[in-house]
Image (cartoon, rainbow, N blue to C red; front, side, top):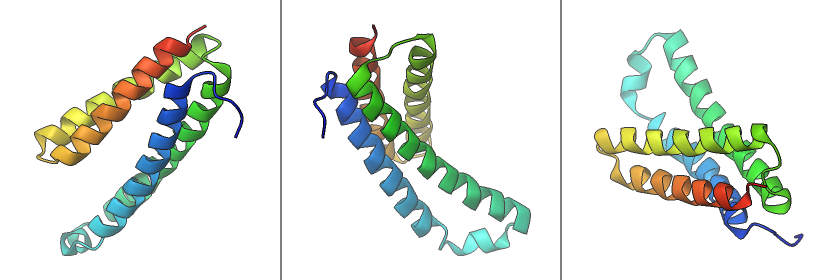
Length: 124
């Protein structure tokens, strides 16, 4: 592994990889719930596809954070993406809190803080 100029973004990369795996595992468990079979087929399909899209999104963010750990955030597009993912993680965490899933809230909030501070420190 190459030297990381921005270790917080390297940590965010690892965290996003863990989120991707955890998100997939949680989805596989939730898809076993009998109530999903009562939903219309198109809705059930959208839920399932969307869940796995979320897992791939976390993997993509892990790869992007790894790149940023090497290069820093070099332009306004990088900064906008980092700001959006930080906001998304924090917003999703608050939604999980409101719906009673405090462990997921805590994890997403922690990763959003790591992402935000890492991005701020890596802005060129």
